[in-house]
Image 1 (spheres, rainbow, N blue to C red):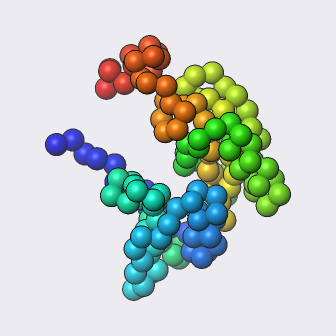
Image 2 (image 1 turned 90 degrees about the vertical axis):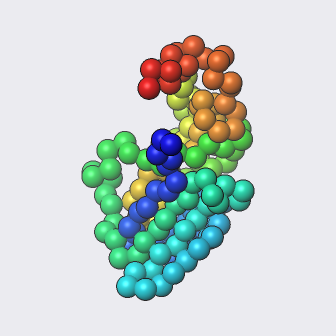
Length: 149
């Protein structure tokens, strides 16, 4: 069996602020938490609790944009309108970093916000992943890329 990506774990400075952010912006739910030497919370999308989770761990350093580069977590959404809504919400909350923009396939339409710990979060529509994705066989450049791996 090949390795299967199951989770992404992030140390964060303010655990509660990050939980609130991921609930509000990404609709992630807490599925597990434990409190030992560090507080640890597992979060997931409804129905994907056994596929991919985000693990948040307390007592981490806050990241700066300078350290970040273009690294980010990407979330697919159901429409361009939803990207626009999240961008507007991010602007109102003072956390918008990339206004909505359209780029050639496979990038699609996206915007970005920054979480309370300084991690960049992208919301996209039209990538070959998640809602709005075309079947892979309709996009030759993507099919060629994935068949080479």
